Image 1 (cartoon, one colour):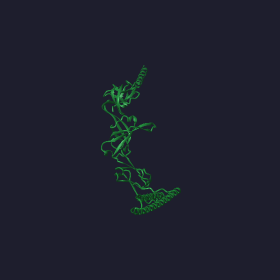
Image 2 (tube, rainbow, N blue to C red):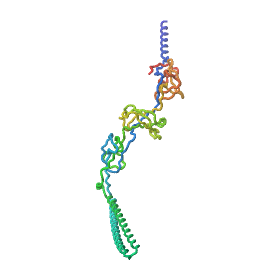
Image 3 (cartoon, helix red, strand yellow):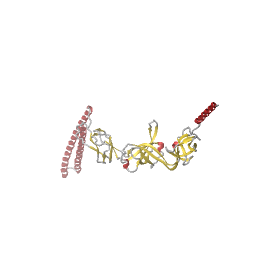
Length: 396
């Protein structure tokens, strides 16, 4: 009898232990209380700082540039600071064929000078003869030996001969200049002699040197970039946004500049470019990007350490809501086409459908479904369903 009683007690204890092990326990969850918050919707993207007007100083002539003594960061003054000095380049060397052609041109020009000089002497002789004829005609016309018409003809011959002399002299000067031009073609490097030093290139604006593009002494072609100059105080921010984000931004929108190593800076959107450019992302996806320009606001000393081309993080505000009933994004999930959340009521999870308004990455505005003071479950797992017993943890 005692043995049977002990067996029954053991079975009862085992059954109780099994029932206790299989009895459903409340699921531990993390919760938070619904309250009112300010919600701001913004776009965050990387950008860079840039000086609004950057001037590139180029070589005005082809020649030998002297070594540039400026360095990045040096201050320059408009029309005073010499950015670079250039000496006109010596003529290039002539090959045998080019030399023969140039020498032949010189000989032809000399022959032209000789011909023009002979024409001058001929015209002067004609003028001298015409003057003598005019003297004899003057004597004869006073005696009445020749007619007045013959006298006028002699005067005309003198004037014509004088004009011929002037024309011949002008032709001689032309031939002499042609000879000088032909002789100049024979000048080779190191023999020019008349090259002047130097052509000084001065700063077009006041500011600082951003980059020295060509530093060492060398021969450069006209138009070669030498130095970049800008005013570091005249900074702006440029960020290329996705086109779907850019259409939501209007000039004048408030923004902040962060992540550059200094304090958060206030800024305003000044321009959104009307055209997009195609860029390939790091994942190899083609994206349409739109350049957005922002102007910095406040005391320039607050961004004194920000230079040209520095990386920044741009946060542009699209919408702000004050004192709104807000639910954490981590408590929301989709139930069909609607948003839903679990509210803790009497130790159980109760499924609620929510109507959501504006939302950002942290909170969403609640228009209906929960009320201020309700406790919702954060990051509900698939073990939780409507009516599931939960163990409420401390609210953050």
